[in-house]
Length: 363
Ligand SMILES: [Zn+2]
Image 1 (cartoon, rainbow, N blue to C red):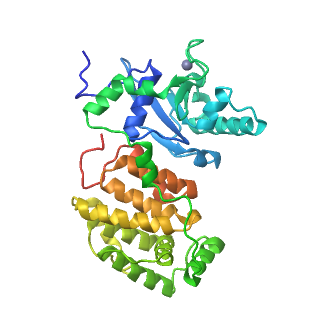
Image 2 (cartoon, rainbow, N blue to C red; image 1 turned 135 degrees about the vertical axis):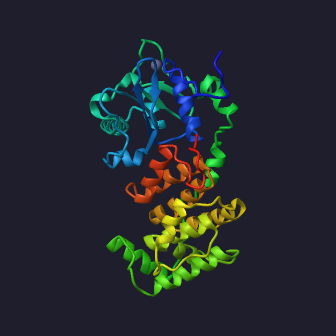
Image 3 (tube, rainbow, N blue to C red; image 1 turned 45 degrees about the vertical axis):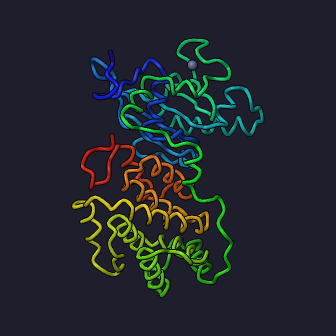
């Protein structure tokens, strides 16, 4: 009998629902609007699952080839597309030409991300909000027109093994509460307008200027004490100021270590020291700082949220809240598919890397 409590997690590759359940539990939530690829390394006696890569559809559609999404020669790739509209289209629900075009473009982007010649429709699955199906079934009639109910994923051996080992899935409500509202408060403030203009025109904030000293001081105060009483404009400024990479990295340092925010003009070696000689964080303190970052994200203008959402994702990763980190990174990459901190952190999570203070891997 299979031992569910220890040893490798049993995944029956002949049963797609086992693979799909494995991915949801591995991420910690039911994903949407993304592609997950899973290379299968063919070992002589059994197939071995490689590391999982998750790419938001917005990144795929932007035509970028995500690092690690392709798989090397001689292996096989499982591709899972989480996309409600594509699922509906395959089920015959949408017939508008625009929906067809959009689905065809998405599939072409998936094929190129997986690596053209290894893209295999019979190892590609499409998951909608309520049901899943094969893109092309191994055996005719395997998938009914409406697909298989998503609830079948809970009745899998993998789900049982993951639950026994303490893995859980975030509910849709928990996911929604994690993300900032889809609109930001309108603020008429000349300081906010000046930073927005610099970001829109030059794509970055001026390196010098009084804004940097002011926002650094404001971040230090916000991180040091209760952040009640900050207005929308002040929180928008805090969010926008993280487009300055030095300030952003110092905020990450202060949030992760609980120490005072270092000066941007100082020696930056503290950041690397944190990665190599990390101590376990004070979790209640870290959690309070995550609350502060969430209020800053909510006030930050929508198109400029990639840095604040990435910092928030970093904080959750540091607290070993991996599903939360993944969800926030997807949101960050919606705003800027190429944002490098989000890309790097996504790769760490794809490779099951725990934060350095925790020596053991994530799994
Ligand atoms: Zn099928």
